[in-house]
Length: 97
Image: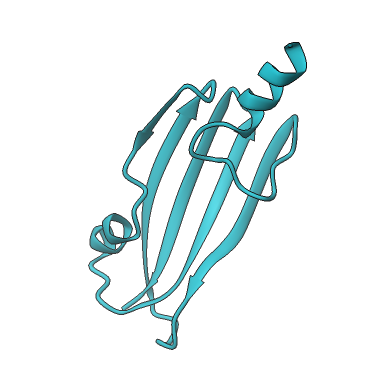
């Protein structure tokens, strides 16, 4: 039973991705690419999860683009941080002009 609960906690929340460490995760991975040139603007958006039970935030690409005034997106990266699956965050970086 403990193993099932521990697995659910580690894999749950907004940070459940393919590159998750059981104790700690701190990775940045590509999410999307377009044919637009890499721009000088970077917008961000974040979501946070706690215990795999509660997740909050607006980490949408549209939200991130609006924070930097980006209308032509070149690519999107996401940085995932997770500590024991208890506390997780995903921060999306949208690049463009």
